[in-house]
Amino acid sequence: MPLLRKALRVSNRSMLAFIFFFSFSSSCLYFIYVAPGIANTYLFMVQARGIMLRENVKTIGHMIRLYTNKNTTLNGTGKNIPYLIFKRSWGLVGFFLSLGGLIDVNMSEISFDEIQQLFSKDLDIKPGGHWKPNDCKPRWKVAILIPFRNRHEHLPIFFRHLIPMLQKQRLEFAFYVVEQTGTQPFNRAMLFNVGFKEAMKDAVWDCIIFHDVDHLPENDRNYYGCGEMPRHFAAKLDKYMYILPYNEFFGGVSGLTVEQFKKINGFPNAFWGWGGEDDDLWNRPEGDLGKYKSIPHHHRGEVQFLGR
Image 1 (cartoon, rainbow, N blue to C red):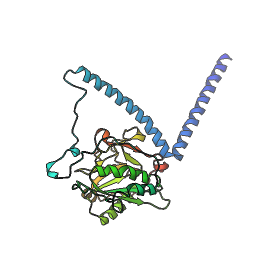
Image 2: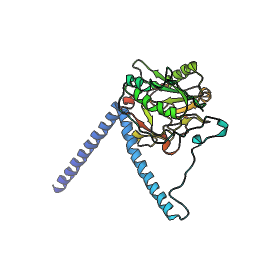
Image 3: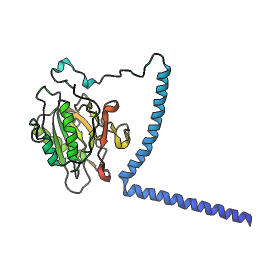
Image 4: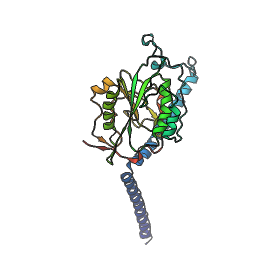
């Protein structure tokens, strides 16, 4: 009898443990099914914390090596930033003396009427937000394409933040907001393709920036010009603790020259939902220049559907 009672107790505990783990796993699967966007975010946050811990250990080890090495210093000059260096061959196109680095990111809401009042004093801003410097020849003529749907509170915040930064970078630029109507899943790639076609009808551009409306740069030295390779500007996003979700991530803010975009025949139109359409080519700025803040309610839980 004692052995039987002991066996029953063990059996009951095993059954309770099985019920607990079954209920927990079922709840997790249901949560992933009904809210895949939130579930992916939570999963990435857990992974990111592990990555941060490993990076902190590496940093501590590096600092110890610097202290113990008599021929090194903690105050090195570091590497020069190539697109902030004046080249004589450019003529009057390389003056970035007003760029101060870190800039304040104001996420407080502002209306379009307030934006109109704020920038109406600048007579150089043409309809459509088209602006170019009158004291030098701009290095790049930049068309900024913004895929849009139901982000009316984000758009004026975006303009308030980005226009002054681009003016300091002495770029010629204009904004093209491409809105998707209807209730179908969001197709960011198709909006970019449409925006590119319309922008090229409007003016002669040589650099195209593909920009999410809820991404605000934290450093004005993150130069919004193109290069020999496609560029990824949003290398670090605050909502992901400034860590890339994966190495080939090319989303958020990216830029290509007009010729590069034509050579790849634009974005694939098969990506319905958020993500995946712009992860094939990447070349991101180093260090802290690529830090961005994300306006809350990012993506609003929309998931990705691959129409292929």
